[in-house]
Length: 146
Image 1 (cartoon, rainbow, N blue to C red):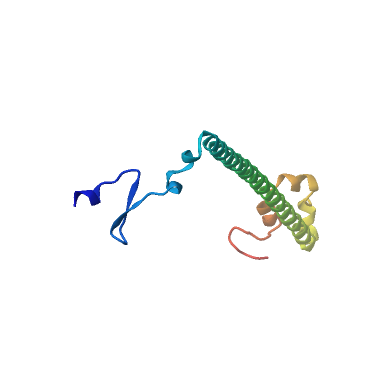
Image 2: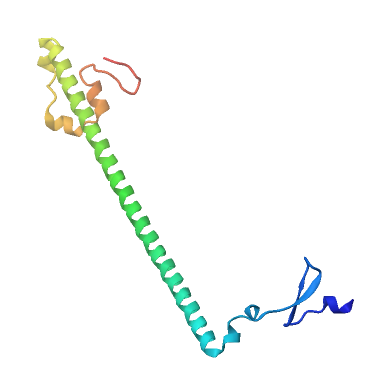
């Protein structure tokens, strides 16, 4: 009974048949074929490891390039969004100036005699809310319309 639990390099236990079987030469590995085969096997393994390392490094470089390109695209999006916002603000200010000039022209002649017309130089210094309030105009902050 003690023999069935003893293992060595020549025998192996098969639980399906409940018997010990002799280990064949194929189970002993590449050393059975001699040192030339073992050296060639190790060289092949080293080449494979070097190839895996190179692929991993290329993958890392590709990933870094991808992240750099994504950052570039995000910067472009932010730049475009800022340009769109500034353009929208300029259009809103231009519309407010036009409305203020229309309101000025709707006033009576006596009002126009004592109040100056909105000049481009003065309009450039004013905010959109100030222009909207000019000549009894609208107040955007309170949500009132003209």
